[in-house]
Image (cartoon, rainbow, N blue to C red; front, side, top):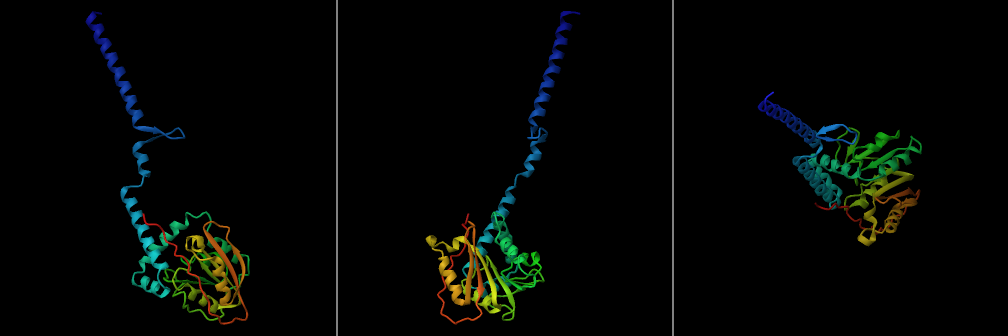
Length: 273
């Protein structure tokens, strides 16, 4: 073999070696190792990242929810009823945002109320004021009148919470789960008093911040006092949850008409982003 042939052979071997290294480097850069040791391409991993459009849709949806939520806390029940009658789709927007907020809570007040009802006779009739998706009615064996401003379900009665179609003294349990929203909320409780039978039970769950006097919320003792003056006895309270408070009352058999000084409940408004 001549000197020229030996040099040509070395150049070929060197070229093959460099080509192999470049191929290996390209393979390494086109994939990343997952914790399980398998490789997933960078292109595939980018699919799980929300797009700019998804983020904008989420932001717009959250903005609509905050707008509707503020409206419901700062208007009367009949105004809210007219508001949703003009555009029923807003009710769905509101409840989608509401469910998103509730998903962040470690415990749901509706679950506690459902379990409380399940521990009692299934023959007791329930009125769920501000029922939303009527989850309570779907979770118990009792007869439940599901009441809300809009009905997207045949089982839900659309009405103003202060003027329901229920007969007087016709239900055993009245429930308000995060639904004392209108500026005329005392009229909702007066309506619950009307439809409840004597010795019937009134259950209220409300956002805790609405009862914080240090941040202009109502004093919970004043709230309890007002409902007792309406014609109830306070049977139990649960302030242990950091997100909401629970109040339990029983309707008195004999009631007296009184001028009641109702505390103003602080609106539960979400910060604009």
